[in-house]
Length: 165
Image: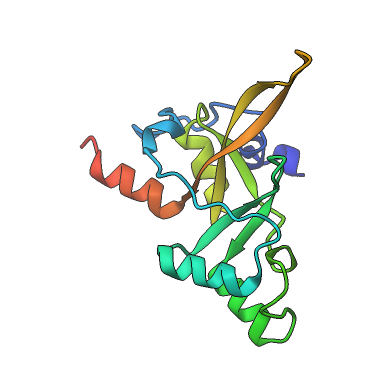
């Protein structure tokens, strides 16, 4: 049944233009949001240190990315605190014990319409950009770089600041 759901089809990249009366911002690219560079945590960061970093830097959430570039998930301040206070995690545990590993990714070239469909179900999306990397013997591979984290508030702020009445 999800294959008959247009929003699911858009979110998963199977459909592009399904909304007949699109708002003015529907086809604008995600890169126009001018997102700030994200704070990224490595998997070995402890829950205690993650809480300190997030509070000090004024962030509510941050992607957890392995040194290889693999995106492992998102850590949020509230989930980390809740897990520690409930006894499900210790302050000394690595953040990988409290990460959300279910998350949506969106590219810089994707539309705000697609982002809007993702944000109807998810609290955030990780903005990624593919980068070609070469090693010493000349072989190449594609690596996804985390470019930012986008929330419904980012989209709403963009739309309200640029509203074309």
